Image (cartoon, rainbow, N blue to C red; front, side, top):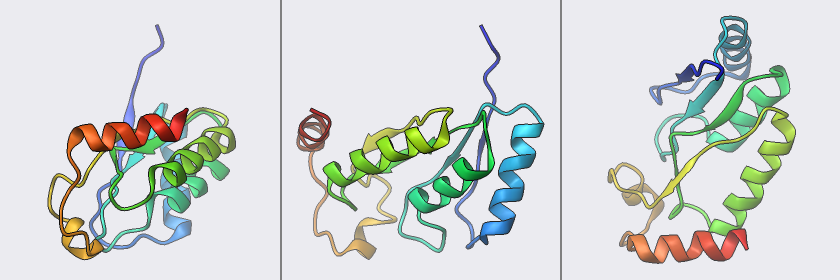
Length: 129
């Protein structure tokens, strides 16, 4: 079994592309096997384009989000984005799916309520089939 080490990048502030790319390259050179980002509507880079940047500058690092916030985007779009990142990265994509549970993103998105877990699970199932 190969060792598993991952780097989670915090959501405080907006990083620029060069700094993100340098961090990803450094993580890979230090032997990290994964790099994950949060998915909230706060001052941070959106995870899909940010992770595409990571995929473009690394060869072996698996990428993903801590948890993908499915009530910010239609699950079919998220599924297509994740599948694209999986192919682009060459190393793979890993992520959990959940409605906005922290309350940090829901007010900013204009969403009045968070879908139930069973409703979100149904969206995911339909999107991936």
